[in-house]
Image 1: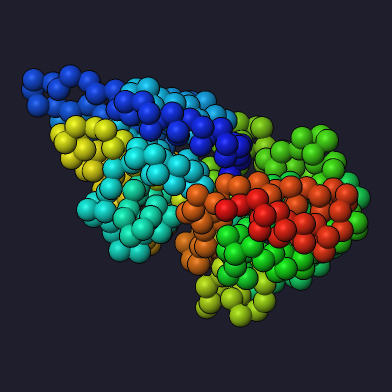
Image 2: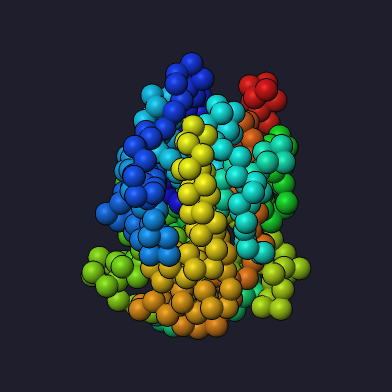
Length: 424
């Protein structure tokens, strides 16, 4: 997701302040009628409707509990929320925007243990909020990475649509065929996720392991696509600050590996005219090998959940009300609310899938529904205090390789050495 990654040091510094500050929440006086008001942190409220949608739906079921939104700058979200918690003015319900910072809040004593919140069977993302056997937040959405493709551009090039059986070799071949000199076969955004997320998930390797040899073939593939002109090269993308929405939405590229959050954006941009009007679909992410391809199998992809935690300093009354909200947000009613606005919930069912694809402008083919609802999702960012630092090092490696400044083997070795020497 397009989330600016903050330096781990800035978060840790504010977290240290929290340990010496009062650490409380901005408790409001208890309403004499018995009603409870809870504050919920969020960002970009004008363009991120999920917070208000969940607050309204919950209040409708629980009229004695009101959820008030507290907006933060999305690019500095974790730092600002941590600072408010240290000052005693933090939100009662803390949205966990990035999994890599869950341990920052947990180790600072700022998250309530919510292991007693009842969650539906089959919900994804719970492990990302589990530390030493205790749960400190619950997932309400679980995006995963899929392949978006432009059916009109495939038709014009005479290339068969993805059918769920693709490996990366099939993707590369299609990208080469679809490139026509004016448009690219695919757009690979410059985030490290686009290469490393797939490589880690499909090789079942954690970035915490410190061994990154499995990344080599994934980088060699991307470099070959750049050299052949099948995708925009990293340096051009970076220098021109290209957006994946612009490249795919205005038909400059026929394929786009991206997270499922893009569905709602693409639908909205086509409706507003910001994106071109063309038919598109969703396919499973290409796979490392054929063992996980086909609609009778389960493709492997990656993605991190987004969750809700509770400020550890709230009163018992607010804690009880907040836990009711967390249970609601993780359940099927909330999943249906999220699906209706194009958001991928952590809990899915056949009914939720139908709601999601009933949104006007969404694709209606069976493969799109399969790709969205059926997959093994492995975490991009394992829950650890080491994750942010390691991902920073791997981000440097990513830039070095794709910019052409460092050969693949040398860059991987340097990253392994840095992780061994710099990350405790």
